[in-house]
Amino acid sequence: MPIITAPVITPEIPETPPVEFPGIGYASITYVDPTGRRWPMTDLGADWYTLAERVSGLGAAPYTLTADPHPRGGSRLRHVQPQSRNIVWPLLVKGIDHMAFTKNWRDVGRAFTRTLREGPGWLEVARPDGSGRRIAVYYSEGWDGRGQTATGITWDSAIVTLWCEDPYWQDLQPQSVHRESGSQVDYLAPYPSVSSGQVLGATTVDNGGDVDVWPTWTVTGPATSITFTATKQRRGDDGVVRSVTESFTLDMTETVHGALGSGETVTISTDPPRVRSGTEENLGNGLNWPDAVLWSIPPGRTPVTFLLAGAEAGSAVDLTFYPRYETA
Image 1: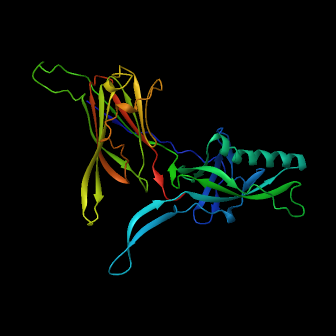
Image 2: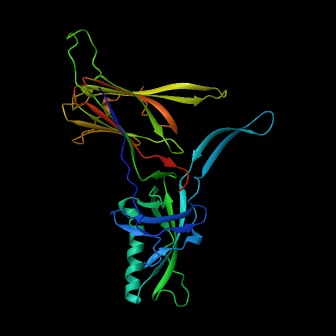
Image 3: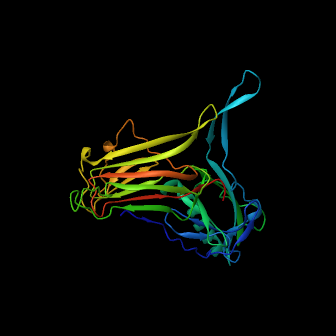
């Protein structure tokens, strides 16, 4: 029979001491640069640390509201568009002498500015209970010293602005659902029957975040085509909530790869839309365009069904996503 396995999450002890930040409380902050190096930001005994009192931009995402005039007065909201956010991040850098300070100043500055050439860094916020959230950041401006007497010798501070193309924070721990085909049976022995290997089953995906998430799917063969269906609740313009079904199908026989063999995989990303085989073949033409909807998962519980044609024992589907949040 198909089974579901839930991820095992082991809370980690924050690697740096927590510091109280206005608006978010006690947290340990770590910056991860594009190379993967981790820079503790709340260890007050280190050679660099965050000046918590001036931090801003960790709250709810900014929005642009589009409204239409209403004939009876006022306006009616037509569209809500989340905007990129800026995080203001003041830092103090020091050293035991001028050359040690200069090295630290250059190293920390490079850790931020290299995001403009090598991809985003991550600002991680860890709580004392082991939970945490992160946001992708790019350096925007601000790596300048105070320019005052006595600064720039063994210490200085900068107020850095970090730009976030996605304004939402995401959980440090991914959520996943695993569905696998059980053993196949002969339709006629010992009596007419239908194997559960084709329909890996209906399940309910629980998104504990604040906003929609865009999942990634990994399918393991054998399989000839895969259909993913979600049932969502939508509020119409008339204010009535209705059930809406969204789905997409990947027909492997329409791709250059052909049907998935045993142990072969295909990965479907919904944001950005992308379909790749385990050998990096582009299989996007196998989607049932223009009807395909690479759907998101809204907050709350969403019924989801996975259907594999040509499934046999070992065929599997893995859904993975990171819950997203308004605040740190």
